[in-house]
Structure formats: C-alpha cells, structure tokens
Image 1 (cartoon, rainbow, N blue to C red):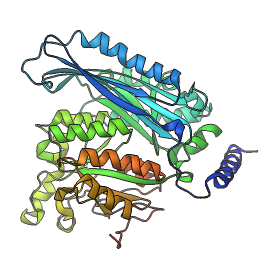
Image 2 (tube, rainbow, N blue to C red):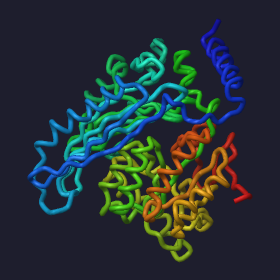
Image 3 (cartoon, rainbow, N blue to C red):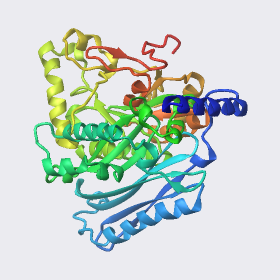
Image 4 (tube, helix red, strand yellow):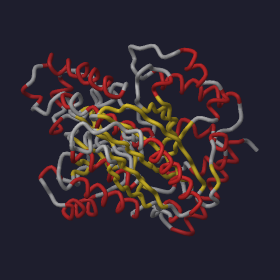
Length: 451
C-alpha cells in the first residue's frame, strides 16, 4: 500500500468519525487547544520594565514547561536592563512573550520570545519553540512531521536556503553559516511552529546577517508539503477538513498605543493577522512593524501615504513599491508581497500598472466609523462566511477589544484564522500583479454581493 493511499484511508476514517460526532464542518475550538495567555509588568529600580507573559494550557506539565522557560528568561535578562532614559516604559524594557497556535485536533505550538528594547530599538532577541500533542503531552519534533526520505530533507534544505536568502536582498548572507543551517542534522533540530495552514521555521537574523535582530521566518504552506508528511502529521494539518477559515486584517497603522493593544489582543488569543501598513509611517514606527513581523503576522502595504490615489500621477504611483520596500527592508529585511489601496481605490493603481496584487475585503466591520465593539460583533455574527477577509483598523480605539472578541467568537463558530498568505495558499491561488482579490473560498476570490 503506497504512502498516499495510507494517508487517504487514514483521513477518510478520521473524517467519517468526525462526521458522526459533529455532523458538520466547522468544529468549535477543542478543549485541548484552549489557552489562557496573560501578562504582568514589573518595574525595576532603575526605571526599566519587564513584561512577562504566562500561559495556562489544558495540561499542567506543558503549562509548567512553557512558563518556566519564560520566567527563567525574565529573571536572567531582566536584571541586566539599562536604566531608563525617561519616565516611559518604552525607554528600557524586556518583553518575554508566549505565542501559541493550533492545528488539527490536538497539536499546539508555542514560541517563547524574549525581546530586549532600548528607546524602541530591538537590541537583543532570544527564542525557543515547542510543539505538543495535547492529547498525550508528548513533544512533536520535525522528525515526527516529515518522512525520513532523503528527498524530503533535500526539499526542505532548498526551501530554507531560498527563504533565508530572501531577507536583505542586496546583502549576501554568510555562506558557511547558511550551509550549516541547511544540513539535515540542523534541519531536524530547527525551531518551528505549526499554524492554521503553514509550518514556519524560525531563525535569528544575526546568524546570517551581521548586526540584524529580526526573527526570520521560512514558511511552508501545508498544500506544498502534505505529501512529505507522516500519516499522523498529515491528519493533524488537514484543517480544511475540520474548520472554516477567514483572515483578520488591519489597516492604517502603525501607531504607538493602539497597534500595541491590538498586538497584545492577538498574543492573548493566539491569532495571526495581516497588517496593511502605511509606507511613510514605517520609519517612525519601525519597532511596531518589526514586532508585527517577529510575532508571526503578515505585513503588507497600504500605499506610501493615505491620500486619494486619483490625485497622484501614474509615475508617482509606479514609484510607490520601491519607496515602500526600501522602508520595509530597513525595518524587517523583506519587501512586501501585496497591497491594499486606501479606500479600496485600486482601479487607478491598475491603470498605472503599479504591479502589486491588491487585497480588498469581503466583510467590513466599519470600525473605522468609530463603532463600538458590540456593533462590530453584531456585524461579524450576522455576516461572516467561510473564506472571508475581515477589514479592521488598528488605529481605532475600540479595535483591540473588538479583535479579542472576534477571535474568541470565530473560534467557537468553527473558524481558524489565517494570514492572507495562508488564506490563498490553502486553495493554491497564486497572487498575480495588477489583480484584485476579495476573499478566498474553494479558489473563489470574487467580491461578495451580499455585504
């Protein structure tokens, strides 16, 4: 019996059982996936601040291990923080974060991250990852996910090489260090997390690019690696058989306070999102853009400025990607992959042949009108559909709480939140230049006519 047939039979048996148990697609979040993630702040005598996240999971040994790692870093790194240069908590701080993400019915990934900042500049970063089968408490390794065939690990090595070279495209990474990271032994021990539609390998930038502190990510979407997986991993990443999907997106940032609160809401709920940032704000708020990227969210363009594109010349519009990408590479090391035009005014951009792919939306929360969280949630409950792209704005006062409640509600309704990249990759949709996308359900990217 071939590997593909074995996987197909296993999936069929599991799906049959799930149908008997639930009777419908769109399962509510499992008790095994439930996590309570909260933080406390401690102010040191010299004015520096340590923010420590702690997570409570369904299994006490998992909770103890993850929180123990975070506490140890808070104690070790927090005592060496330099004195704050002013009275704000942003002057000198250590954020020890716990990111978590789920897949399948029982697998749960964690990334524990210690980010040291001085005057909003990232000065150091430490991290480690863990993935567990929450039905047993056993740790899941990459060797549990991928078959042992040499061809499988050769494929992974090539993808890692390609993904890491994509950072700072005008700079050559250390060739010896890159080769070492692509060796099979190193790949088998690589740090990774599992998400709704992707496996992400994590690497500190300073291994390859001197002086850089970004947390580099190599993303492998499930559809492209499913045939390389073990049977168990195949079933635990078959999320389209268990859940609806949607993408939560945020426009108009970054800003100081509200973007921070939105990111905290996403950290608390374990959700990933997509941030469409205004290019001319990247320089001032590079620390926010870097946090968005390093915490696993997709970062895209919201043009260079928020003006009406109809008032700009074609030449000015065509210059925009270069300006945005220069600022983005300075902040996080990689250019953007797609754009959302302010106000959704994409026709002018297409006529000018700017060359971006354009991501619209299929569910507008109208938070930009200042709507309350109750009003936003009423719209989401009434209108959400599989494959939707949800429009929010991280500059609005009510949006952090709205985001928190949306994630919790959507999970209970059987949705798994994806980045925009994951949403299209799940159906094999490759974004094309000068093309508009509103949603993605079974490959349909057209505009919804009922909202």
